[in-house]
Structures are given as structure tokens and as C-alpha cells.
Amino acid sequence: MAGGGVGCTPQFIIARFFQQSRVYSTNMEDPTNSGRYSGPAMILGGIALNVVANTLATSREARIEDASSTRPWFAPPAWAFGVAWPVNNLLTLWANRRVLNSPPSRDRTAYLRLQAATWALFTTYGFVRFRLKSPILGCTHTTLYLVLTLASSVRAARIDRRLLASFATLVPWLLLATTLSVYQLGDSDSPFEG
Image (cartoon, rainbow, N blue to C red; front, top):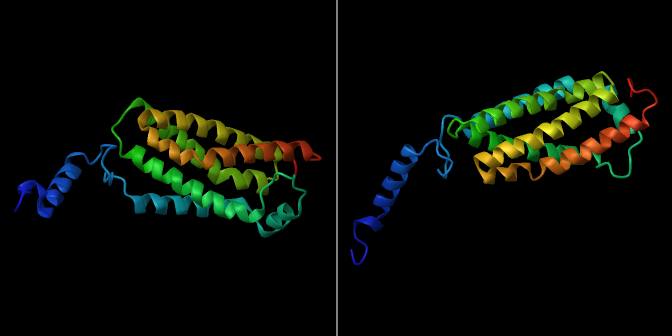
């Protein structure tokens, strides 16, 4: 081979890539990040949490009641929730997978604990807000979710700054949701019932 030598053959490049992938399988620099936790498993887990959240969340009557309630001018249309949450959840699952496959550290442990709490809040929000019809619990859930998400973003940045991309849509959405929850709390006739 003219000018290429052994280092330029496709076989050498592919072999070198797989050798590096095995050596750095849990390294954040690995382009495939092929650690112990796989993408499909994370997505299936996310889908399962969404199914549980939807099952706990609302009855048909509660959905109709919520749709007919007075909404402030800054409230997003109902269809926006169906677009925003899948995007937010996929980005969060992407970050969670990268963190799970990263080397153990204090920041990793703290991030995973914060994420467990945020997923618990995500899963139970519909239940406390719509089934229990509690604007106070809904506002508390949303505010706590925002605070824990911001704390997660600090820990994520310490692990790998690229993980901050996973918060690009979630944080603005939670800021809007928290503002909306505070509005609904103030607009409610009774603080305990919607």
C-alpha cells in the first residue's frame, strides 16, 4: 500500500476501535458507552414508569375536569404535554444511562439518588394532583421536582459537562410547571381541593 502502511487499513481501524471499546467500556469518553446498562433497557424502564404514572394519575372524569378548568394565559396547550414529557424523559434516560455506566464516585451516587427521587415524584404527581385533587400536593411535588432536578444538574456537570444537555428542555418546562402550580394554588377556592 502506498503511503498507508498497516495503520490505515479498515481492518486495523475496526480492530483498534473494538479493542478500545472493550478497554474503556465504562469510560465516559467511549462513543458507544457500552457499559452494563443498555439503552433499550433504560427506554423500557422509562416506558414502564410512564405507564405507572398514567395509571395512577387520572380517571376520565379528572381529565375532563382538568381540561375544563380555567387556565392562565401562560399555560401551554394540553397537546404540548404529550410532546414535552417524552422528550424530557428520553433526555433524562440518556443522562441516567451515561451516569450509570460511569465510574463510581460521590457525584454519581448523589446524582442517582436525586434521580430516583425525581422519578418517584414524576410517577406520583398525577395521583396527588388529580386523583387526590390537591393543589397543595401538586405544587409541592412540582417545586420539589424542580429543586431536585437543579441539584441533579450540578452533580451531572461534575461527572461530565455534556450531561447538561439532558436538562435543556426539562428545567424550562419545570419552571413553567412550577409557576403554573403556584398559580393554581392561588386560584383554588380551597387549598385542599381543586
